[in-house]
Image (cartoon, rainbow, N blue to C red; front, side):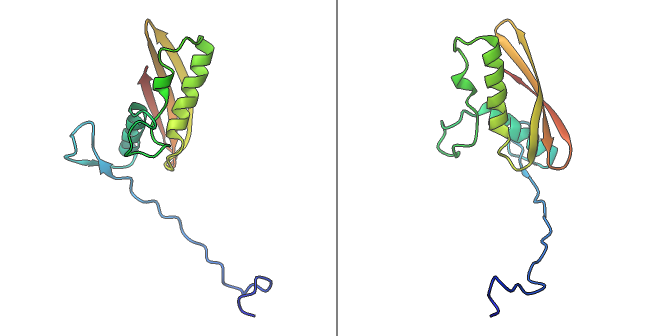
Length: 135
């Protein structure tokens, strides 16, 4: 029998080469849709936009896009819980993108009513992008 799984034929398994598609997108923040960005610049734009967009607020995005940081702001929580939750929320907002391999090295600094968070994002290409968020 040719189609039996018990007797596999030699040469039926083909190794496929993974082709990385360009991540080209419109430049939203500097030129206002008049040019495109690719590579690390497109990834930086995704990070910025995902951290500016509230999750499950806009119907145009699926339930994985955006963040839930707005639910944490104004809550009466201690600093340790705030730090743990903000790290989790930023990581969850970014890690589902297939261009991102890791999100880590969080440094949280407080000044008056503001909270400054710096972190590293590892990309599929092997590079590391350093980002900063102010909450």
